[in-house]
Image 1 (cartoon, rainbow, N blue to C red):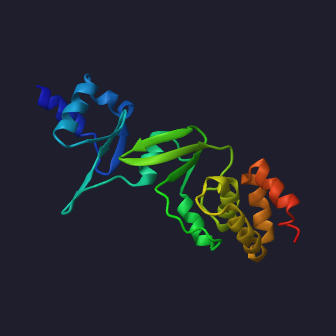
Image 2: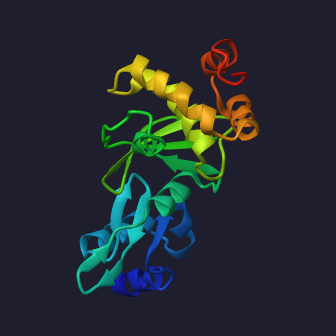
Amino acid sequence: METTKVNELRRHLRRGKVYRRSDLEEYSSSIDRHLGLLVKEGALQKIAPGMYYYPTETVFGAVPPDEETLVRSFLKDDRFLVTSPNAYNSLGVGTTQLYNKRVVYNHKRHGQYILGNKNFTFVKKPHFPKLVTPEFLVVDLVNNVDTLAEDKTMVLGKVADKIQQMDRKKLTRAVREYGSARTQKLFDHGGWLSA
């Protein structure tokens, strides 16, 4: 009888999908026990409190969920941006460190969370773009320059040079939309946008 109920729950699972406990409650009268049995047998992986992953299997084993799927399920929202301080290295402004950090800009959560054995830093922000652009990266770097391992003065000096080669209109918009008060002041009073 127990096996029949667990199999009934299993029928509603799709490979490669992340589920919240609440997504599956309607398919079981003893959801916690049935989820526990599926985790114990290896059919489901518990990736965070109340979150489960039904892995896709390949010849090399189970494929972990991608970051976007994890974050979307955790937030129950599509409005977020996953980035990393490593992205600053693409700007050519002297940042070379590698960070084991994923930052999720979103409208709902703030704090450190482990999802599927990955550490995420959720930062609640009113505004962020749908995609990472060079203009957003420059503004984000200046917002977070105090948290970087590199020499702050050297990086900011190279940022001042870099922005001279960027689209002024797009950069001005990015500063207004995504820059902290300190970043906006630096761009305005530092003369970076008027040079």
